[in-house]
Image 1 (spheres, rainbow, N blue to C red):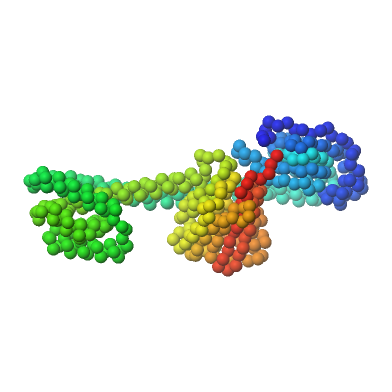
Image 2: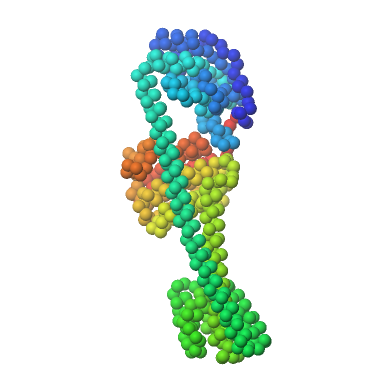
Amino acid sequence: MSDTTDEIRLEPCEPGRLTTGDLRSLFLFAKLTDEQLAWLAEHGCTMRVPGGGLVLREGDPAVSFFVLLHGTITLTRRVGQDEVTTTRTEQRGVYMGATQAYLREDGVPRTYQASMRAITDAEFFVLSADDFGSLMRDWFPMAIHLLEGLALGMRSSQAAIGERQRLAALGALSAGLMHELNNPAAAAARATSALRQRVAAMRMKLGKLAAGKVAPDRLVALLELQEEVIERAAKAPALTAMQTADLEDELGDWMDDRNITSGWDVAPVFAQGGIDTECLTELESRLGSPELLDQAIHWIGYALETEQLMSDIEDATGRVSSLVHAAKQYSHVDRAAHQWIDVHVGLDSTLVMLGHKIGEGVRVVKEYDRDLPEIPAHPAELNQVWTNIIDNAVQAMSGAGTLTIRTFRDDDRLVVSVGDTGPGITPEVRKRIFEPFFTTKAVGEGTGLGLDISYRIVVNGHGGDIQVESQPGDTRFLIRLPFSEPASA
């Protein structure tokens, strides 16, 4: 249901309906004096809204302060084209609306920070933003000075640090992606250069074969042998480094016995293709000409190396495509903000994007339950969660250890577990780990916003939960996400 087209459905305000006793029963006003309660009763009023009605709309001027008397309401925030439910409550006395009306004018328009809708018939005690701002400044001047300093200071700090953090994250991811792309790109360039040389050598060798007055039937047979050897190489099982070295020695000895020119240079090519001495002996017998064998071995060797170089280019360009695909999956630049997703896709793309940070000293273990169903989520936001938690885990291990990522079902929730073998988190730190601006890293190395942002994305944005379990050598972050959409109006 869109809040952009719905009309506000509040019924007319009814002044004087609440007594001072009624107001004192609300936890927000419980400590006020009788005079202050009388002032509230005089300046406030009650409003009703039927179930399903929109009470206030995000972005509209914040003109009223609301206190819930009864009913169930939801608060939603707009993210792109989607409405994300951040709060659903029926607690009597909760407040919303023009909650910052007490701040001094600083040129920033005061607007509602969320939309509020009544799930059931609801009733509110309402003050105008001007009256609420006046009472706060007149009754609690010292508290207002502190709140203003805190609100304005945090706004400035978060704006500056958040911008720097986004730039730093973008720079780190861009550098990592360029690093990962450089390796296959360089490999493709090297293979292309070598391929050009081998093709030129093949042309020369073909000319020599033709100039050697090879009978047409022998030349046709040689071409057929070449295709058979290439096909055999394509189907050959992969060899270990030791097996390849042993095969090179056998092939080298075979070629030395037959006085093949530069046999030590050709043998590794045949060994890399899995061609053994039995295959070469068969080739020798079918050629039936010792004079032709030398040139045939080199020509087929060039063909084999050409195939290997083309495979290298294919692998390198495939790696580039995989990295680009992972980057697109990570950022979701071409997909909707909210959708049903497979969390494993986001986890894998995040691991690819962080590959340069993880390094060779950290062993990555993936224990995925591939039978888990898709969940409703904002994939780009969840990828930010995976990035923050995995990055912290890698840093905790100082570049050496085991990173274990598991997925499993826990009743009606999907659980993603990110574990590391670092030194662990003390109980004192665990109590504060999700607090904004709290960090155990050295000055300049952490903002203290990563886990706070992750917590808000999972809990407020997706209706899930994050827990941390830790002891030396075994720290696990457990992210629980619901399988179904949260209830909404």
